[in-house]
Image (cartoon, rainbow, N blue to C red; front, side):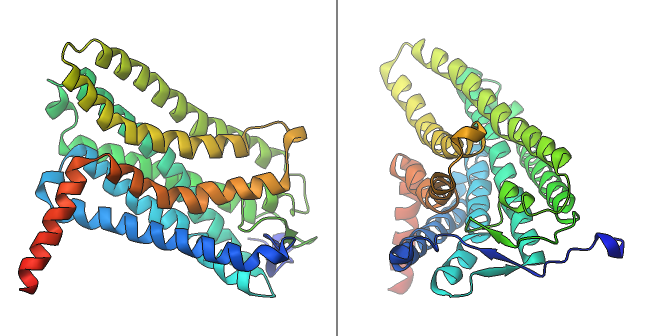
Length: 313
């Protein structure tokens, strides 16, 4: 990179929730609690799906990937946020900001793609059960997961590099608690029209397209379930889909509401609190959602506990 294109900034001030001074300690406790829940819950699913052979199926292979993503996703934001909530100097280094954005995009984009893949898995399992073992074999599952990661890595790196190679020689203060795309882009000391178009395209491509594919998959799934003659089979099919559908609506609901709205509806306060939902709260809820209505995970957990008790004796 040429010297005259290098950034003048060495650090960025994350104002975060500094305008809510009376809430700093409360926010710290809440963020710490949800971060701990996210780490423990997702780590538990990772361990259970590895140790229990009954969970070595495509659905739980994708769930393993999702849990790994959730740990990385919230860990790219929560630790620095916790430090800043207790610190008078709420800053992050310029290149640290770039790394945070890169990992946030990488994990976020990969999760969008993976949720779409999980919907496809449920579609094949319910609508084409006889073809399921052949369509969703181990090799195909690895390909689908690898494709999700490849898209996330390429878009995460691409957008981060394109933004952080711009000149930044003006203000270094953003009204957010992490290095999100648009707040950082507004600091650039040049015309950012091309970057804004690329971000808009990213939002439509990565958020809306998978979401619409998921909705289309579930329209087909629900129509198939309703045609099942046995009520017990209908209930079982609905049960296997309800957890995934709940996670989809929580994740996509907050992300779409945050990033897809007219500029006149933009609110710094509302965006910050919505961002808290999808970066801190949602990763902690997903393991609970998947565990409460999932008999196989409950059985695997109880089996692991029983093994531990026998070992301790």
